[in-house]
Length: 297
Image 1 (cartoon, rainbow, N blue to C red):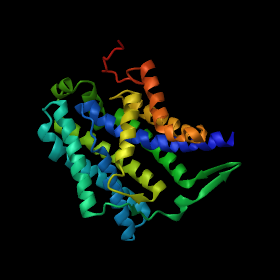
Image 2: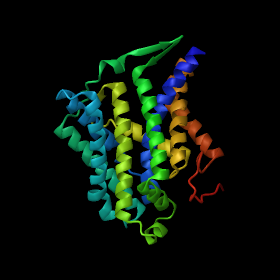
Image 3: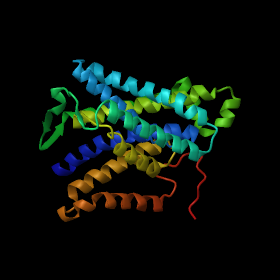
């Protein structure tokens, strides 16, 4: 029982990070129909800012918000420089643009900073553990869980009560009608990218706090997993992105913990096979977007 509880805590911590990243992807996709594969580079930017803050002696409690702000500013700049000029192009053009932005940033990280993994200064308390009965919980895991829950509550409040959040929801439902109602496209799309940057920045802080390092490709794998989570939850559905992130986190952690040793090398294919089976049962995702009209045939 203690082992199951231990792995459940680990799964919630990992799933929360996937959920935040999947939310960032879903917010942009719901409005623009764009899967932004450069989203992972926003994580990397936040990670490097956190690294340089540590090298400069800036306390973690100050460096972490600075890293999140850097990711938000980078996301807005990315939208303005790379995506706005091709906004009215085909989905394939925007997708290729996102890959190009990701490749350019990765090369810049490798040539201007380092191609190797760099250590990040993490407060000592994040490396400690709390013992509750037979359960040992890392402080960094608790930090990830609490931060995820706070972000989800704040995001729900923003989307349901704040003017810009309501405008984003309206644009996600029907962008053309929302524009006719006076909602400005540039404002809504910039806000969506800023929100995705915020979520990527928070996810980066959680990711780095558990690994204490950053490298040019740091964001690639987490965002790839977040993309899978977004599809599993229902592409374009914000609640679905959260559900998909947590489900994927549980699948990965429990397979790693309970799969026999001789099967561990097949852990990733088995996990993806389970995701495919879920999509066979629910082809539109666990919580489909309201505007999704796809049907199982």
